[in-house]
Length: 187
Image (cartoon, rainbow, N blue to C red; front, side, top):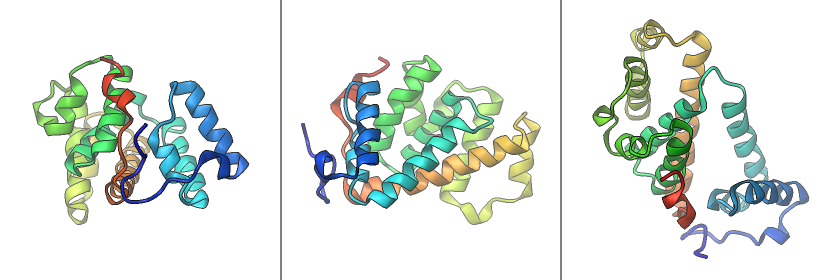
């Protein structure tokens, strides 16, 4: 297996605090392999806890469907040229959206994908928030509400976009590497 990161050494799982080891073991059991983000985030245990607690809140306490969350992640990650997140979350788009082509379309140019008006507005917003956050205004929020997103959903879209901009930057600087398993999942 390749190293989880190219620029930082990931700690041995056995050396991590018990709660991190348990979380990694649970994820490994669920996925059938250990996603490299878990090994990489073990570099700083306090950050691991905060990162995965927030991730879990984003996917468990949300007005969005899981495939919408993953669509946001892949679109933002494509804009940020984050290979790890495009590949890992691309697999999740294929699984949750039950669409083998959508992830690739979103990663390269979400406007090329066959999307509903609602999802196009969501991803246009994600692009603007990623590339020009200071230009977000009332009209951008209103546009999401006009296509059917609730106030809570707009909050959740914003939170997912913000979190994955952070995640992409961590993955880029650490040279986080996608697991080989992600390339074929959901195909």
